[in-house]
Length: 414
Image (cartoon, rainbow, N blue to C red):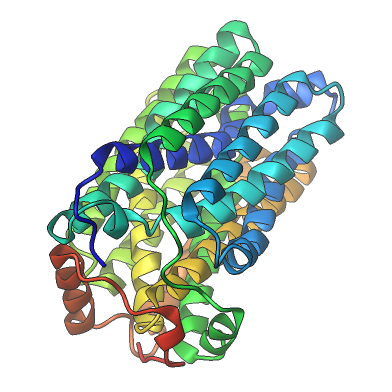
């Protein structure tokens, strides 16, 4: 049943919850070298801070969603934010790198659970006519986390130390938790995602193609971007302020890329994903050559940011078409595959970095991104059809609720 009142404060609370989650997840990118130096571990080992949350999120996305299927969504979201608060404060007081990794395990559980449960709540918080706009507000947390959260966290880390950055995130998360409990109403579950539905979907060729494309492009991105700070410090010879400025430019470009892709992906999904992968390949391959200057590196990061801003919406479109009758299942599969590859990319990039150099990491990632372009070009069937994606977008704008996962039929065609 549609809500009788519009609860925009609740929408803002969920958005802020996702914002602090996204920021906490990628915060170590700007603080990686500082944390590694304090615990006398290599940059590649420090990259485990990015690897663990993704793998845990990939596992927790389906498990938390299924385990809490009959639980009111409000206390579930509150418990997940409380877990994130504990993780931030644990990182701030950690005396050993292993405690940092424990905190990142907690972050991973929060990511998978909150994204899978919270990202689809817009239709239950606002009237149908406003559901599309509310969904857009909730998903704006992703680029905002890159634009505001990471550069701000890096700036605080530069001024007062990385521990202060994590403590500040803990305090902010606690405040968001209080706001969420005050503004989000009781939300008894109205639909569930059964593991059997996910299992059937994974046997379909369209989902396998979506998984392959997501794996390649996300591997290319996070295998390189995770270590962009060591590159800027060691190759570009940028100082702390310049590194923060570069990250800010990248994040701002990501917002632009997100909106540009959002207006075109329903009509040209193959083009959007292929172009994004091509621009990532271009930026990563050129960084070792042009990124040695303080002008070349920011310019290439802007190109990279625009490109990556288009990746999540393009990837999610492919998954939505691959599982057209079970949008919640598509969301879980997207979250799980994205997070798992996020971690694999950080792990692979760290291994290359410890054995070679930051420039070699960029070249390796650029080659994988170029391979993504080839697969997008040659893949049979291309991707979601204009007709199906346009219909999906129109339904979202009208605020039509998705079918229940129990009603899902396996398969779907791309």
